[in-house]
Length: 416
Ligand code: HAM
Image (tube, rainbow, N blue to C red; front, top):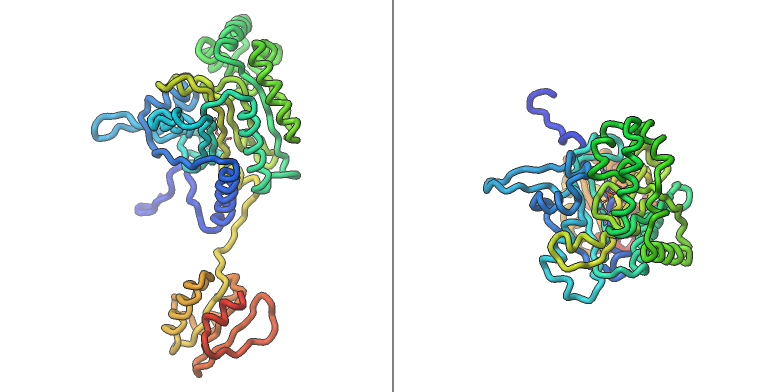
């Protein structure tokens, strides 16, 4: 890098105007569907006490062990750029006494998140999530509501039929039921210890479930014969899972049961789910979530069941192949040199009517302005000639130019 030339930090993206329209459509759809379903919007700080994520996300996760952007502030406090949203939303739920509101409390959010991962297409160190959390109900109806919402969002933004969207569904059971299964799995992993990757070996005692997630060939072979949690759910968990599946069937949401679905965060209990998209490469997970019935209590609140999800905005845009879209205005005003100030006034009048308008601001000649007018995507051009006359050109509709007298701004806005 030459001296004085800067680049955005590794793994981060500039959000350029060409992609802004597609991004705004996703945001609009998220806000619209959330309102339709009675979710309130929440925005939490970009950084939190490190301890919140260490405890909330889990000490044994990759996120906490290797991926957090952690720094000390001037007062010697350890702070971390948020790697995910759920711990922060739960912190806010407790801090603001939201357990006193009618339950469940339904919240949605949108914003940047930070993980120090190896960057590649679809995986960044700063990325954006749209998320939803429903806190305060253990009803399977709430699981179904969350999943149907996410399914609806992905389809509405354009990842419907043809995009190869798939929903994988699993259940991790309650903490107690999982403890029994965990012992079973640890015994099994210890029996086959020598065939497991060093990474997995090192985590047998702390997070044996992550072995299902391994890319290592030997580990995969061992895991093909491992006992499955889904076969060891207690009856309450199994009933809950069956009820969720029934509700999804009734709603016409298609899914595959994946008994080895493991999520990269420790707080999950019972229902877990992930949407993948065939249009994405290795980073095929476009959205995911699940129940986290123990998290509120773990972070110091009353025992409170909850569920939620988050969708990766960059991955959605990648899957949509959201290409470059030029910034467009409806009206472009072209002016001879002696009428530039008049053009400036007319443009402001058109904008005041709520119609987008622009003009040349770089001193281009008449011809240059005409070219710029065509490139601007404008439907209408107003042409202010040197001799004091004005014409209106219907760029989109074609046909003859129309002479203008009287209120030029009004005539131009009328045509849009
Ligand atoms: P997550 O699966 O870690 O879940 O992330 C959700 C989504 O964020 C992923 O499916 C993916 O689309 C996107 N994502 C994650 N990491 C990256 C990255 N490095 N680059 C680009 N996109 C990324 C959570 O974060 C949970 N908080 C979801 C949740 C909410 N569970 C319950 N409530």
